[in-house]
Image 1 (cartoon, rainbow, N blue to C red):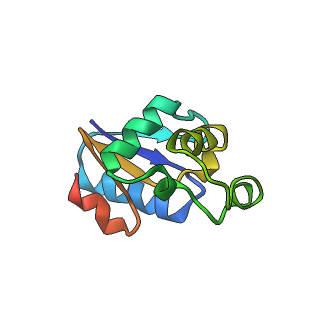
Image 2: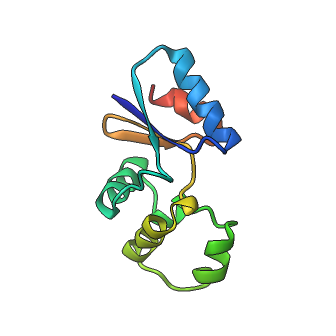
Image 3: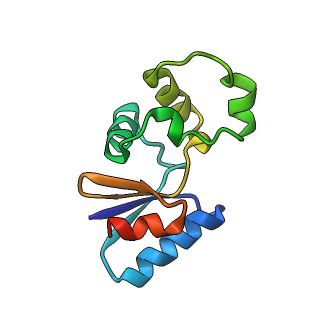
Length: 113
């Protein structure tokens, strides 16, 4: 089952959801601001993305700039920051099986659906 970690207020996230709807494949929408992924879930997603945790962080968010920017943080500390402040999580994230992509640019989603 395909999963999209979605924020309805984000244009890119809405575009990603629209792409999935048009694909006519089964998918599940995870409203990650309401149903925040656990530390272990985020760790798994980051592994599926094949990136360091810092690449999943929205670094222009005020929370990041005020509380974390410029600090030497471990992978686990970065993941904890995203769990505590889910608006720091880049979106949309689409997971299919053991693969995941960040839907920026949108075409990335086509690689796994």
